[in-house]
Image 1 (cartoon, helix red, strand yellow):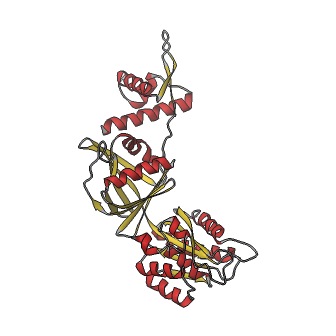
Image 2 (spheres, helix red, strand yellow):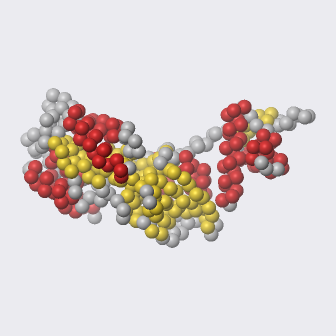
Image 3 (spheres, rainbow, N blue to C red):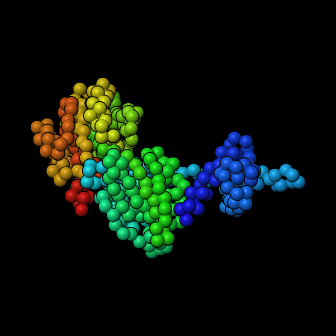
Length: 372
C-alpha cells in the first residue's frame, strides 16, 4: 500500500506541474516524465479522474490526444505547523491545523489511543501533546478503536521522530499532508499489519517561557501589548517558533497596580544553541520598549512547572510578595530575572503557565485544584 500511495503522490505531482506550466497534460506527457508504460499512465489518469483530482480538458478526437488538467479542490495540507520541544526526558508536540475541527479530531483520537502521550490539550487550532520517549502498542481501527495515535517517540541526535499509526482520513493526512507542514523535516510512510504507519521527523527544540510585568504606566502602555510585541520580535530570530501568549491575573489589591494587576507570559520553541541569544534579545527589547522603569522579565527554559513555583503562584495571587522572596524562588527553579519590581509579577506569570485559561484569569481559583 505504501508503494501505491507513493506512486499516487508522484504522478499527481507531475500532473499538477504540467497543468501549471502548460495548462494541460496528455497520457504521453506522464508516460515519458514518469518513465512508465503508456497503459500504466492511462490507468492512473483514469483513476484520478474518478477521484476528482483530474478533469478532462478535451476528449480524444482523431489523432488529437485527450487533454487533462489537475485540480486542487482539496487544500494541499491542513497541517500548518508541526514542531517539537524537549528537555531531554520529556517531549511536547505542537500541531497547528487549518481548522479547530481538525485539531479536535486528532486530539480526540490521540487521547483515545494513548500510547506514549501523557496529556493532550487543544487551544483553538493548536494541538499540544506531552509525551515520553519510548514505544507503546496502540490499537488502531474502526470505532471504538482510535483512528490515529502516536505509538512511539525517539530522540535521535538533534531530531525527534514520532511513530504514528492511522487509517482512513488520518492516513491521507500522514502520507499526503504532514510532510508539507512547516517544521517537518521528512515523513517516511509504510504499512504494518494492514495499518498505515509513518515516521515524522522534526527538530528537537528547547522550550522557553518568558514572563513580563510592570511595563506600563498610568499614562499609557499595556503589558499584554508589549508581551505580544516581544513575541513578534523574537520569532523573527532564526529558527525560533511561536507557541503562545497568555494573560494571568495576580493579587488585585496591590497598591502599585495600574488596572487589574495582570501579567503576561509568552512561550517559544528555540534552537538550543540560540537560547542565550534569544534571552539577551528579550531583555534588550523589554528594557528599550517598557514605559515604566519598574519593568521586569523572567526567563525559564523547561517544560514543567516545579511544585515550589506553583506555590509561589498561589501566594502571589493572595498577598503582596517582596522581591527577595521572588528572587529566592527563581533561584531554586533555575529562572533568570531582569529588571525592577516587575520581576515579581513576571515570575508569577511563569508560575501560572500551563494552567487552564479560566484559572489563569481568576485569582480566586486555587491552583492545586486546577492541577489535580
